[in-house]
Figure 1 (tube, rainbow, N blue to C red):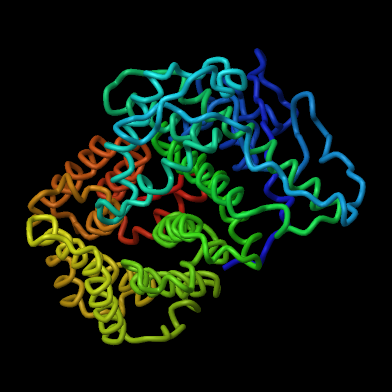
Figure 2 (cartoon, helix red, strand yellow):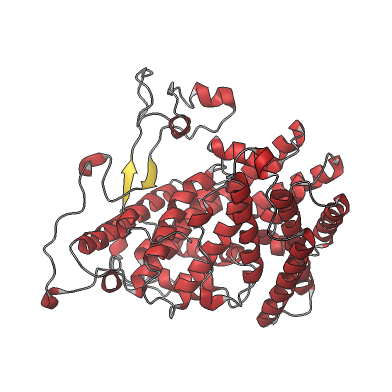
Length: 514
């Protein structure tokens, strides 16, 4: 895990990029498209997308408003150049905690979740276009029935997004806005009914988080203690809002993984900043931290984010489903990066892995057993869901072995071992009885299966169809970018999918199958 960054890194700012009518020949600038800036080339700023991105086949994000997390200094707008205001150093008698969120009365109930209200909701004053109670209830109901189940390994009555996150949104307007935003966006994707509310709600939520963080960082700069400034409730609603906004970005566009990472980076900073404080007693904080950990570990295998940034599961939650498996998978990724960073391929090929293929299989087999034991705590009935979950465990087991073979052994594994895991992976995918109910668990292992098609057109068609179903059923557009990656891999006959994924990453395209 990364060392604890300064809490001031949590500050946010809005960078507005307006396309000029004429190209600028003075080099890259703040008005260039982000892809050209990243490539350090001049952007022609053509509309609707720049010609240089189109010519290279790259994704041009355009020039519209972009939210990003900065370091406590506004970079554009009426606060440009300003930092947090100076505050007199505290005295013992004046110490007080930062406000946890704008005050709000309770929202209407959606299928037993939220109770009705009387009078004017303060959010209607803070956010003039706030949806009416009926629309709000419909969006909350949609989140409860169609989104919460996508966020966990196995949907059940213990789903923390229903038990803990939704009730928290009832008390925290920022989180409520974030949930309404992703619900509206998810509805637009799954029903083809577009709405501008989702983007405006997202922007409002980010703005309100910015205000809260500005208050906290200002007081920290004035000498207040972090533990006294960010209480458990504040930390929880901020973390929940950041992760919800990240999910929103991934539902909004095929390149949403890149935009989502800015929110998740803020969440990582928050988790690391609070690592030395006492948060272990809060179930929701630990749950959200572990959710971020699952995302980070799986995303790190394909997006080439720094392994030092990855959030690890809370030490006291080692018995969680897939926790041992994820820890082992991340060890593989860390060693793979060490090989990549060692220098030229001739030198890196001489580095001996810390384990043999036989030992890797043995360790993942132990992790498989631990996962099945942890899943037993959910007391699933002996029906198709339980049978499918056992198959999901096998699917992840063989996907991890294939990832390990390709990432650290690199040609030093018997072809028969690769063939066995590949065949088992496809067999288990075909055996799923109710694929729709476990669709949220398939993106990463299906990506790995897609990299092992080896020119088999029947398997390529199966994987392409499955990924289209994943994107459609789950309502997250970023999965389409993964499918584009696989089709590129198949059409060009790339032998090393990790090398292609690295090229995508260098061109500003993140492959995130989570």
